[in-house]
Image (cartoon, rainbow, N blue to C red):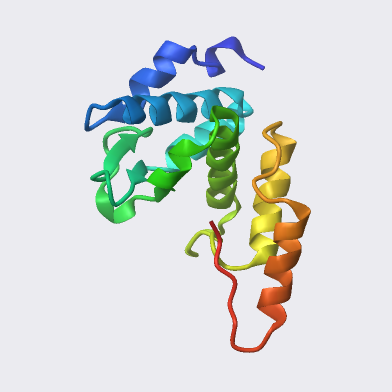
Length: 162
Protein backbone atom coordinates (compact mmCIF):
# COMPACT_ATOMS: atom_id res chain seq x y z
CA UNK A 1 0.00 0.00 0.00
CA UNK A 2 1.36 3.39 -0.97
CA UNK A 3 1.77 5.65 2.08
CA UNK A 4 0.34 8.69 0.28
CA UNK A 5 -2.92 6.75 -0.27
CA UNK A 6 -3.47 6.56 3.48
CA UNK A 7 -4.67 9.87 4.89
CA UNK A 8 -4.11 10.61 8.53
CA UNK A 9 -7.14 11.16 10.75
CA UNK A 10 -6.88 14.97 10.73
CA UNK A 11 -6.71 15.10 6.91
CA UNK A 12 -9.76 12.89 6.65
CA UNK A 13 -11.71 14.92 9.22
CA UNK A 14 -10.90 18.06 7.20
CA UNK A 15 -12.64 16.47 4.20
CA UNK A 16 -15.75 15.66 6.21
CA UNK A 17 -17.17 19.08 6.86
CA UNK A 18 -20.13 19.78 9.11
CA UNK A 19 -22.89 22.28 8.42
CA UNK A 20 -24.06 22.49 11.99
CA UNK A 21 -22.46 22.31 15.35
CA UNK A 22 -23.50 20.04 18.14
CA UNK A 23 -21.87 17.16 19.95
CA UNK A 24 -23.73 14.48 17.97
CA UNK A 25 -22.58 16.00 14.67
CA UNK A 26 -18.99 15.69 15.81
CA UNK A 27 -19.56 12.13 17.00
CA UNK A 28 -20.99 11.00 13.65
CA UNK A 29 -18.29 12.89 11.72
CA UNK A 30 -15.56 11.15 13.71
CA UNK A 31 -17.22 7.75 13.31
CA UNK A 32 -17.48 8.23 9.54
CA UNK A 33 -13.78 9.17 9.50
CA UNK A 34 -12.94 6.08 11.58
CA UNK A 35 -14.74 3.84 9.08
CA UNK A 36 -13.08 5.46 6.07
CA UNK A 37 -9.66 5.09 7.69
CA UNK A 38 -10.19 1.36 8.16
CA UNK A 39 -11.33 0.72 4.59
CA UNK A 40 -8.80 -0.48 2.00
CA UNK A 41 -7.48 2.65 0.19
CA UNK A 42 -9.09 1.71 -3.15
CA UNK A 43 -12.45 1.19 -1.43
CA UNK A 44 -12.09 4.42 0.58
CA UNK A 45 -11.44 6.48 -2.56
CA UNK A 46 -14.43 4.93 -4.30
CA UNK A 47 -16.70 5.49 -1.28
CA UNK A 48 -15.63 9.11 -0.88
CA UNK A 49 -16.23 9.68 -4.57
CA UNK A 50 -19.69 8.04 -4.58
CA UNK A 51 -21.12 9.21 -1.24
CA UNK A 52 -21.86 12.90 -1.27
CA UNK A 53 -23.66 13.50 1.99
CA UNK A 54 -24.05 11.83 5.38
CA UNK A 55 -27.22 12.97 7.11
CA UNK A 56 -28.11 12.64 10.75
CA UNK A 57 -31.90 12.78 10.72
CA UNK A 58 -34.42 12.59 13.52
CA UNK A 59 -37.62 14.23 14.60
CA UNK A 60 -35.65 15.86 17.41
CA UNK A 61 -32.81 17.04 15.15
CA UNK A 62 -32.86 19.02 11.95
CA UNK A 63 -30.86 17.31 9.24
CA UNK A 64 -27.12 17.68 9.66
CA UNK A 65 -25.06 17.38 6.51
CA UNK A 66 -21.62 15.80 6.20
CA UNK A 67 -19.76 16.17 2.92
CA UNK A 68 -16.93 13.65 2.48
CA UNK A 69 -16.37 14.44 -1.18
CA UNK A 70 -14.85 17.21 -3.25
CA UNK A 71 -17.12 20.26 -2.94
CA UNK A 72 -17.84 20.13 -6.70
CA UNK A 73 -20.58 17.52 -6.24
CA UNK A 74 -24.03 18.89 -6.92
CA UNK A 75 -27.22 17.80 -5.20
CA UNK A 76 -28.44 16.41 -8.53
CA UNK A 77 -25.68 13.81 -8.67
CA UNK A 78 -25.46 13.28 -4.92
CA UNK A 79 -25.83 10.04 -3.00
CA UNK A 80 -27.21 10.58 0.49
CA UNK A 81 -26.77 8.21 3.41
CA UNK A 82 -29.15 8.82 6.31
CA UNK A 83 -28.34 7.69 9.82
CA UNK A 84 -31.51 7.86 11.94
CA UNK A 85 -31.01 9.88 15.12
CA UNK A 86 -32.29 6.95 17.19
CA UNK A 87 -29.09 5.09 16.22
CA UNK A 88 -27.10 7.54 18.36
CA UNK A 89 -28.09 5.53 21.43
CA UNK A 90 -25.98 2.65 20.06
CA UNK A 91 -22.33 2.16 20.92
CA UNK A 92 -19.61 3.65 18.73
CA UNK A 93 -18.69 0.12 17.63
CA UNK A 94 -22.26 -0.59 16.51
CA UNK A 95 -22.47 2.75 14.71
CA UNK A 96 -19.19 2.07 12.88
CA UNK A 97 -20.65 -1.24 11.69
CA UNK A 98 -23.83 0.52 10.54
CA UNK A 99 -21.80 3.16 8.67
CA UNK A 100 -19.63 0.48 7.01
CA UNK A 101 -22.78 -1.49 6.10
CA UNK A 102 -24.25 1.59 4.40
CA UNK A 103 -20.96 2.20 2.54
CA UNK A 104 -21.18 -1.42 1.35
CA UNK A 105 -24.71 -0.83 0.00
CA UNK A 106 -23.48 2.14 -2.03
CA UNK A 107 -20.46 0.30 -3.41
CA UNK A 108 -22.54 -2.76 -4.35
CA UNK A 109 -24.97 -0.62 -6.35
CA UNK A 110 -24.67 -0.94 -10.11
CA UNK A 111 -24.46 2.25 -12.14
CA UNK A 112 -27.90 3.70 -12.83
CA UNK A 113 -29.63 1.77 -10.04
CA UNK A 114 -30.80 2.91 -6.63
CA UNK A 115 -28.79 1.53 -3.69
CA UNK A 116 -29.99 -1.88 -2.47
CA UNK A 117 -30.92 -0.60 0.98
CA UNK A 118 -34.36 -1.90 1.89
CA UNK A 119 -34.73 -4.10 -1.21
CA UNK A 120 -34.63 -7.39 0.63
CA UNK A 121 -32.64 -9.92 2.54
CA UNK A 122 -30.24 -10.70 -0.33
CA UNK A 123 -29.09 -7.07 -0.55
CA UNK A 124 -28.75 -6.81 3.22
CA UNK A 125 -26.79 -10.06 3.33
CA UNK A 126 -24.45 -8.90 0.53
CA UNK A 127 -23.82 -5.59 2.32
CA UNK A 128 -23.20 -7.42 5.59
CA UNK A 129 -20.76 -9.83 3.91
CA UNK A 130 -18.77 -6.94 2.45
CA UNK A 131 -18.89 -5.01 5.73
CA UNK A 132 -17.61 -8.06 7.59
CA UNK A 133 -14.80 -8.57 5.05
CA UNK A 134 -13.55 -5.08 5.99
CA UNK A 135 -13.40 -6.12 9.66
CA UNK A 136 -16.50 -4.31 10.97
CA UNK A 137 -18.71 -7.26 11.82
CA UNK A 138 -22.32 -7.65 10.74
CA UNK A 139 -25.19 -5.17 11.01
CA UNK A 140 -27.79 -7.97 11.08
CA UNK A 141 -27.95 -11.20 13.05
CA UNK A 142 -28.65 -14.51 11.29
CA UNK A 143 -32.13 -14.47 12.83
CA UNK A 144 -32.88 -11.00 11.44
CA UNK A 145 -31.77 -12.06 7.95
CA UNK A 146 -33.91 -15.21 8.19
CA UNK A 147 -36.95 -13.12 9.21
CA UNK A 148 -36.34 -10.83 6.22
CA UNK A 149 -36.09 -13.83 3.91
CA UNK A 150 -39.34 -15.26 5.26
CA UNK A 151 -41.17 -11.94 4.96
CA UNK A 152 -40.09 -11.48 1.33
CA UNK A 153 -41.45 -14.94 0.45
CA UNK A 154 -44.93 -14.19 1.76
CA UNK A 155 -47.28 -12.82 -0.93
CA UNK A 156 -48.11 -9.15 -0.52
CA UNK A 157 -45.30 -8.44 1.92
CA UNK A 158 -42.07 -6.67 1.18
CA UNK A 159 -39.06 -6.48 3.46
CA UNK A 160 -37.81 -3.10 4.62
CA UNK A 161 -34.20 -2.53 5.69
CA UNK A 162 -32.89 -0.55 8.63
